Image (cartoon, rainbow, N blue to C red; front, side):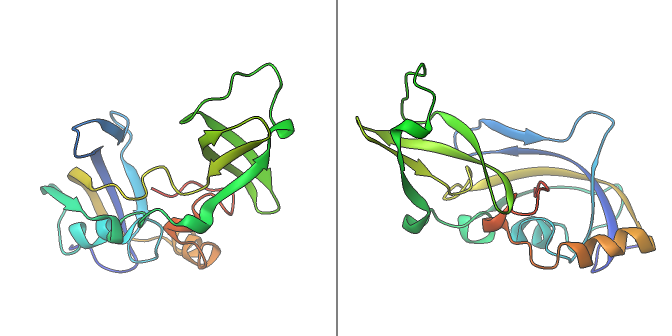
Length: 169
């Protein structure tokens, strides 16, 4: 069976950046599984896997436009310094977790001054080229409950990752 829409796929993978830094990978013996074609993963990952069969391996690169997009200026926000713990020495690139009406989210500190912290709410991999090394571990018909996942995530998009309390890959 080939990878195509509404088929369950499980992969072992390693994700690296141009710097060769490993930023994500499946756990040994625990492949990452999802229903293909439902927008549950970035478009470039689906494009790289489409048509493959169980047992095949592939390496491919995903440009930012097919990954997490380019950083968007409107996702930089000025937050009052008093919203942060007073005993923390804030510095650029620190990661914090916040909560909003749509759930928990993470953000990176872009810059800090006496009164304001500029938070970068872009996905941490926005603007990055993504290098995947993938082995297709399983390809099979999706079960009804797995197809239901597609309905529950119909409005998800990589740039909104985390908006519904789930994790997008």
